[in-house]
Image (cartoon, rainbow, N blue to C red; front, side, top):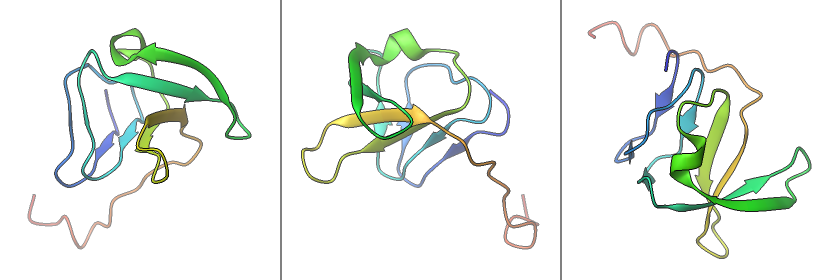
Length: 88
């Protein structure tokens, strides 16, 4: 996807859609169980990451309390710091 942000030491084994973010340290494989959250952060459904392949505007994080991978709608546009990334 375009305009995605993958944090440090993170990665993915599924194709991302546009404007997706994966938090630092999180690696998502096709078989990773992912809890989908609604707009209020309540659990809706557990799916395998492959079911989310190619979908846009997703934010993947690991729950710090229970360790499960969660996904919610990514409502924020990410803009990289132009000065920091000028060497790319």
